[in-house]
Length: 168
Image 1: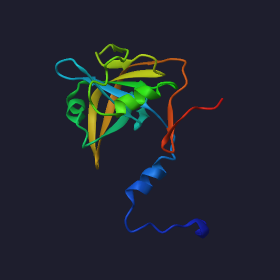
Image 2: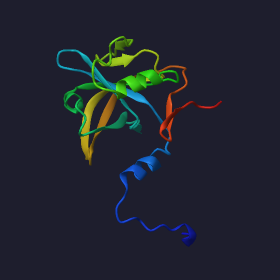
Image 3: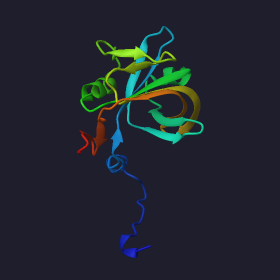
Image 4: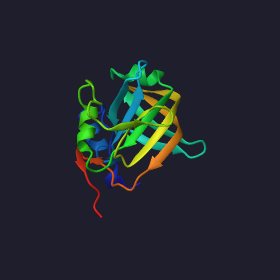
């Protein structure tokens, strides 16, 4: 290791600085959805979504433990994940905002397992709630992909604290 690049770890990590550093990793934006026991659609914006395995087909995402919707997602049998397309920033903002009826006026359709999927997304996944793990102030969900579809659209991207578009 080149000693000119060695850095001593700080005694205590600054959470805001860590968040800024993590923001240097470009991510797609997704809306995670499920249904309440009465059938009402529920959803929120996430950017902690990644593929894990093709055999078996698994994806992972995390939700903050302080999230008011967490119990609904913990108990859900299936989830919908809509990867947002460029031009769907308003949907991202809507599902990241206060948890009133986020679906009012939003076009969606039920996936094969009943999860709400948003119209106009780049891709859809419908997943079985398989495994959950402790992730500190978050809960990690390891979900089995049961259905998926991709569409020829550019993704909505988030980098450095701002929405971005891919350059050709």
